Image (cartoon, rainbow, N blue to C red):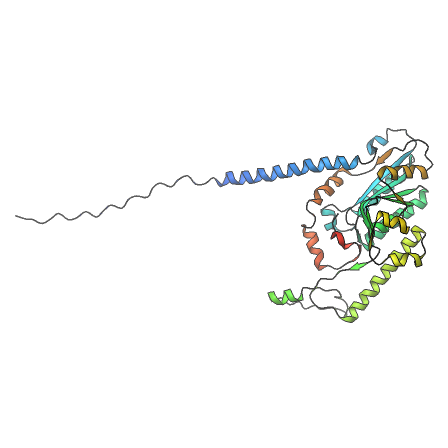
Length: 344
C-alpha cells in the first residue's frame, strides 16, 4: 500500500487589492486658483473703496464733468504720492511715472477756469533727477500761468518731497506731518564677504580706474569715497539753493536746518520751512484766496483712476517687489528720507 502523501500545493499568493481612487489633484488646483481669485477680488474691493475715499478728501468735481461745467473759478488738485523715481521698477508698484504726473499737472493748470492748484504731497523723496524734473515743471508753470500753487502735506513731505513743496507759493501741513530731511544720500552695498562664502569672484574689465566706482563686489577706496562725497556735496548745494530761493530764506539761516533731520509740521512752521498749519480744506481755501476768488472754492481733481488703483494695490506689496531688491545692488543719488525705507 502506497502511503505517500500527495505533494503539497504551494500557498497561493493573495492578489493585491485594487487601488483606491487617486486623489483628485485637479480639485486641489481648482481650490487654489479660486482662493487666489477670491484674495485678488477682496484686495480689489478694498482698493476701490480706498480710492473712492482718497478722491473725496476735498470737495471735488470729476475731470470729465469739467467740460460741461461753466463755473468760472475752480481749484485744481493733483496728488504726488510715494517715492519719486523715473524707472520701470517704480512704476510697477505705485510710484508715479514722472512724465504722466507732469502731463496731468500741466493739463490742470492750463485750463482757463482753473485759477489755482493744490499739490497733495505724501512722499519721502526720490532720485535727484526725478525730483528736480517735477520741481522745474512746477516753477515753470507757475511763472507761465501766474496762478498760485499750494503744497498740501499729508503724512510726509521729506527730502525730495519737501524739495518739490518748496517750488510752491505756500506750504500747508498738519502739526504732526513729517517734513524736512534736507540732504542727499548715495547708498552703496558691499557683497564681498557674501561672495567669498559662495565662491563667486567678479573681474571687471574697464576703461578707467573709476569706471566701476560704487561696485558692490569690492571695497571702496579712499579716493573713490572722496569723489563720491564731492558729487553729494554738489547735489546738496543744489538742494540748498532751491529751498533758499523757494522759501525766500537766506542760506545762512537754512544751512543749520539742512543736516538731514526731520521736523514735525509744528516745528517746521516755527522755523519758517512751511507757512500754514492746517488740513486739505485749509489748503483749498488758501489757494482760492491767493487767486482772488470770492465764492467758496470748488475743486477739480485731475487724476488717472487706474493709476490711483495701482498705487493702492502697490502699497500692499511695498518692500516685496523685485524692483526694491534690485535697488540693493544699484547705487543712485537720492533726495530721500531713509526713515520710510523708500515706501509710501
